[in-house]
Length: 112
Length: 116
Image 1 (spheres, each protein chain N blue to C red):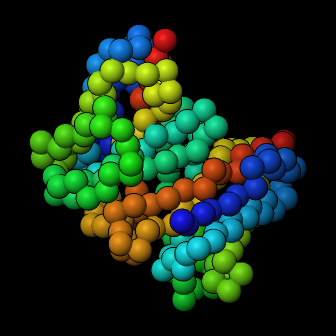
Image 2 (image 1 turned 120 degrees about the vertical axis):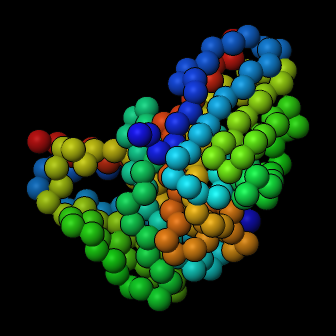
């Protein structure tokens, strides 16, 4: 079955630095990959989607890369701020649709 | 004008009871989902509905019975609650199958269910 792995350990970085989060997947060849943000007590919020034929996608301070050979996506937050502290979830869609599966998420702490 | 709203936000009940969680979306989406997030924060799909029809049932015990009276609503009824049912349940919606480029998931803020 499809499996998504994210670094389960929390990531602590200093304000202003670039945070890099990793998502690896196995047993799957997704057409695209998504990243979500989840704050405590809230539902996940969609951030970015990248297709298999796109190497990189940017949105403001966010950048996502997608390497289908390595079966890996990297999620970068540049010039990080304390407000970026949250859990970030990687997600893939099942081929037949109607089922998005999520990684366990990586908790990011940005210190002022 | 909340896009996906769930009620109640908190639900505390005893083992063996039956409870329901309601979900409504005002985004005009045709697909709705229920996800369960356990204590380890792992988000796992339970059901997906498209145009009121059940599409995905991810081997969920039949004590869980979703009902979709129309495209904007997907309710979750749980019979004979067990301790292991304690979790946060999230409703979500999308347009289309969720496998299309412009169709990410929109989540509600969850219902925290505690079974004692």
